[in-house]
Amino acid sequence: MAAPFDGKSILVVDDDQDIANAIKVALEDSGASVTTAGDGDAAISLAESVAPDLVVLDAMLPKRSGFLVMDRLKSATAAHQPRVIMITGNAGKRHQAWAESRGVDGYLSKPFRMERLIESAEKLLS
Image 1 (cartoon, rainbow, N blue to C red):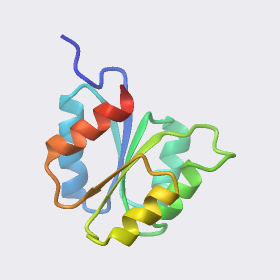
Image 2 (cartoon, rainbow, N blue to C red; image 1 turned 90 degrees about the vertical axis):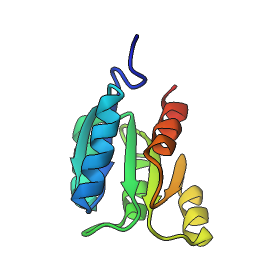
Image 3 (cartoon, rainbow, N blue to C red; image 1 turned 135 degrees about the vertical axis):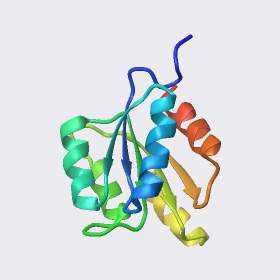
Image 4 (tube, one colour; image 1 turned 135 degrees about the horizontal axis):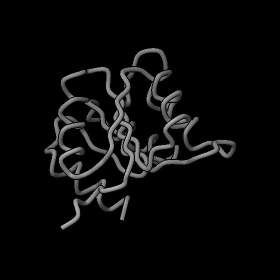
């Protein structure tokens, strides 16, 4: 039986290495090829070189915020526009509304159950 993410490339962007590693392990266990980045500039560089199917993106990042990364990934001039799940520790609804207006495909508030992330990813990549 094939894993849900066989053949899929996912970029995980979070400046908290423990969170990034936990997400990476969970997605790899589901068959994905996972790359990680710890800041917004690295995220854009990797997204342009790897062309992931999905980006799991923290909203608050060093060097360039997740919102600025989103703008770049979803811009009309982007060579590849991956699906994006934004994750954030900010519980405010304004951030979610702003992310959705910028083109985010999914939004999860930290802490979240890993199963919720996997379910969201499956919906976006199926």
